[in-house]
Length: 170
Image: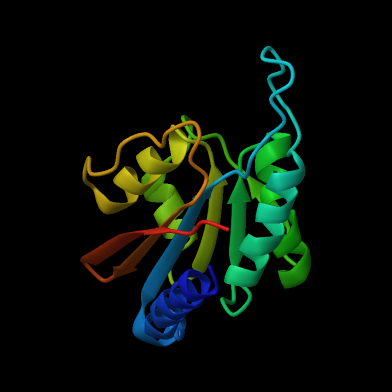
């Protein structure tokens, strides 16, 4: 477990080092994750909170991202996405910006976030679609409902777009 966590930190640190001077090298880096585990007691509850494991995962995401200087954090308006990103937003002293996954203008979003490090938190169906829009490809499929470990990293530098998917299981 510690080895996996160490490899993850090295990988993220490498991505960070490549995008560290975003203003100087004219690059934008997006980090996209799904919300952490939610309470599933009531199947008709549309806006459940995180469960105990979800709160632990949110704290672990904070550790993973501790050396990335985010310029902006985006989350959908659901409790589970807000609670997932809250520890990072508090630590980085950033206000969480709300977005609606089906109403976002991707071209405007890219302009608004150009040359920044951006964290985006969403859902099993919306995060892969968001990544696909950022990379201009239909590459990633919906995340399985039981999966919470995907970390997508998209870097845009000029006309060059790179993407990677990491599995971060705590």
